[in-house]
Amino acid sequence: MSRTRTAVLAALALVAGVSGSAVAVTPSSAAAIAAIPCTVDYKIQNDWGAGFTAAVTVTNNSAAKSSWAVKWSYAGNQKVTSYWNSKITQSGTAVTAANETYNGTLATGGSVSFGFNGSYSGTNALPTAFTLDGVTCNVDDGSGGGGGDNGGGSGTRVDNPYSGAKVYVNPEWSAKAAAETGGSRISNQPTGVWLDRIAAIAGVNGGMGLRAHLDAALAQKGSGEEVVQLVVYDLPGRDCAALASNGELGPTEIDKYKTQFIDPIATILADPKYASLRIVTTIEIDSLPNLVTNTGSRATATANCNTMLANGNYVKGVGYALAKLGAIPNVYNYLDAGHHGWLGWDDNFAPSATLFKQAATSEGATVDDVAGFITNTANYSALKENNFTINDTVNGTSVRQSKWVDWNRYVDELSFAQAFRTQLVSVGFNSGIGMLIDTSRNGWGGSARPAGPGATTSVDTYVDGGRYDRRIHVGNWCNQSGAGLGERPQASPATGIDAYVWMKPPGESDGSSTAIPNDEGKGFDQMCDPTYTGNARNGNSMSGALPNAPLSGHWFSAQFQQLMQNAYPPLS
Image 1 (cartoon, rainbow, N blue to C red):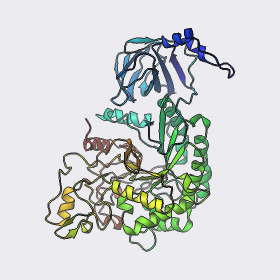
Image 2: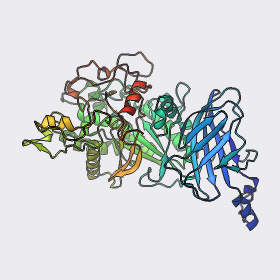
Image 3: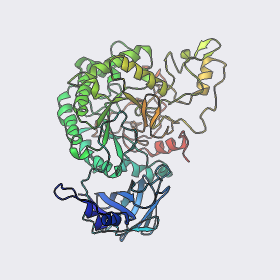
Image 4: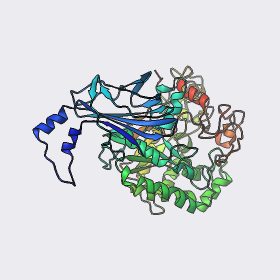
């Protein structure tokens, strides 16, 4: 149960209906409401005894503002430890929450929401008084706060869920980021919530489960629209070409996947309580593309991938997830579409689109269950290479013949995503589908970022000297050395692109650099070992991985610091 303190005069009760009957607002009652300069709704969402998560919604009933600051004081020893959608400072018991650059405008009658994590010992009493820009917001006894309120927002289905919406800031990730030196610069960014095993639905190791995240999202959304990003990731025989992220379910456990993973998720997402949220699901990354690229007689084939191709459980699982989740009106399914360094070759490009259509029309699913596709999830492919194009030649030799490009038709993620969207529509997906691009780790900034094209001595010196993506090989994927944060999450950044997103939370490891026993179903993949000399899937190159990495999904401080250092656009 959440505890609430609502700063509002009891005069507001004059406009509340009784048993559904309409109540007229008289001039005197309207004046009473207008006389309230502000209301502040302060909710404790989660309280675990030594810490808590709070959500605050401020409504301005006075003149419109271009900036704002809300102040309150604690009676106890509460300390704000991380925050989002505002800048919070604290001196002793006194707290000030000021606007960010993007939410300073506060119209008359308008609202703004922000949140934070805090620590305390003893009791966690609610604040009793608030001010907005020095003006007191009156307080009642707190009994009017609606802890189960869905907040505002239309709940109406839209073409692009990110348009006109805030995106959920995961308080657990935010706290880890804020605890890092310099991490407060990005700790208010939205990231994906990973449901990567059955236990994650309820929450693991005392952490937040799916309902807790959705409840927190409701508190963050206030009166506007809010997107929640979920990664649905537990297919049977998951990640058949990589050991670090192998899942808990064996290749034949499709029924368990359906009944113990997808069905419970669908039940929670369909709860009317969450109908006002826009829920974006990223469906099963690193799955279907493997059936095209790592099967059969190819040099990159694996026995595990051949098994999954033969039993059809990737196709069945993805189809089932799309059908179950797509039946919920406020859920937007985005299907994984690999990345340009995986599917950009002619042998992979069109066959992958055809396979995706097969999966999206299996197990009761239709193309209407697919809002779009996501590329580059948890990967490092540069968003836009500005120093060379696929059409360039050097001394008569095409860029496609360089060792780096290696006959691929795409040199970066944006050109691939836009072209692949066209291909997907051509095989039968709806023309309104949009693409997401994960930019959480593809900035490649820092001192080593090339300022211009490479030397024209040869096609390789030209490409290697100018490319932003500084991996040893485009097939390298684990904890890459030199990587940086990419474009910040934003809606509608380019034609056909619904949003740039940070679906992979920066600072979470791709896999351990040495074998670590665990009960999470995660194996040791040599591609995460910095001393590994490679295989056919990365051109027998060094792995390029960072040393001393923990298990996949675990916090990796050294990587987080590197990502901030090499961010592009740079962090201020």
